[in-house]
Image 1 (cartoon, rainbow, N blue to C red):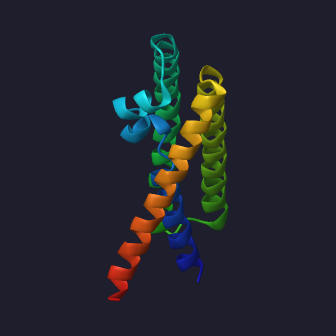
Image 2: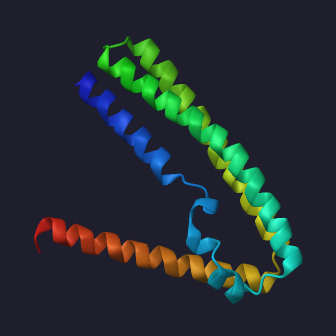
Length: 148
């Protein structure tokens, strides 16, 4: 049971890292069509580019630490480490994930401060459409996997 719990936690931590890709990693939010739709000015683009570079730098460090912690946890599970060692690594992973969430929120707020209310509204609508499309694709994939 303890081994199953450890494996589950390791898998979940990997999924969290994979799903936490920063916005700059998604071309749909940074492509020319998206910028044109929002009406991004040259001045705004300069500011957004600077935010993007800082975010990339900060998030890369946090993500690397997350990968190291994930590897450490996997090694501990493979070597049947003590509960105390596992818990310490899991705690470190949660701290790292919290730092990632905080930084993502900070950079989201910085980006929003550059945009006008109309641009933020258009962006929110586009993000909602992208989420909906993603959910529909996942639903279709799930149906295919179930053989329906």
